[in-house]
Length: 269
Image (cartoon, rainbow, N blue to C red; front, side):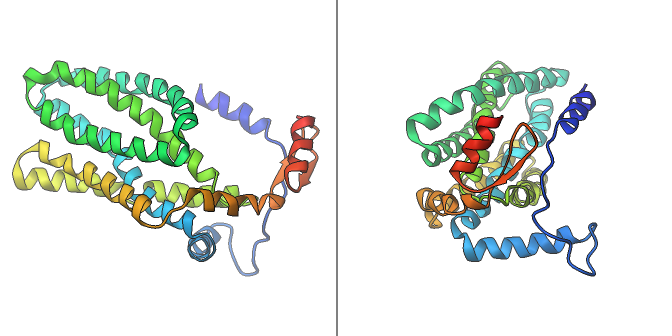
């Protein structure tokens, strides 16, 4: 099914001109690695707020991505839920959709920056409270409540971090910046799992292993709050680059420019 939808999505993509030419002597297979390093250095120099945001993202996203890896052994070993953990994961995924639907409401009420910080605090709190409250097979019933809560907060997290990022990156370089974003999402993905299993080996207590997730959220949130990140400043700098953004109309015509060009393309679409 996924392959079918992927085919139709690819088939209906409109043409877009290349933003850069391949430098002489470079290969399409290796240019990405050097370009990644160049882009990160450029972000640090010219877009410090984006750089600070990515530094925080490296930590909190690693905790989010490692959540299932940590929760599954905890459910099967600590809570002895056996094969029921699959239904727990289904509950999380279903609740994810609820959280994603609630995010626009939260963002509209408190703003993008405050919404992301609130979600990070909620996630860190859940990861800290869950192993304290659910620590034996007798507490398996409570785990279902936490499954729903974790799914809702996870559903809030994914659109929150993406929306924030795409509101502060320079226009016209979305594909390149998305590559950096994806790199930061997964570059430390191994670390929470590694800490979880090392703590378990040292203490023989899976509860303490959840501290790896909590620590990652705390570090990421601290970078965002105390690292000098200013969302409004970053957004204004992004708006100054809107003239570099390409807009493709329904007829396939490519336009480059600011808000007027975007409105024209939108009207054509």
